[in-house]
Length: 92
Image (tube, rainbow, N blue to C red):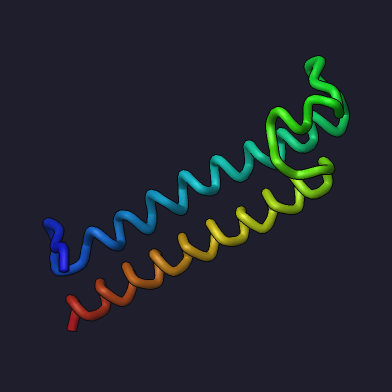
């Protein structure tokens, strides 16, 4: 198992947090992209949807982004729970 500075398996905790934050940022951008294409803001029209995503409607893009946001939040929550458990185990 990979060990970090503060103990055994710390790399997985850090990796989980990084993936959660990056995933959250990318998913928020995906949801915004769905709204931008749906409302044709910035000159991007509905016909350009195939260029930016493999999904067929903007509603699917927004739904997929929301599901991915939930997954990123869940991963971040699990990483925070792991951190709390580690701190609790060190205090004992």
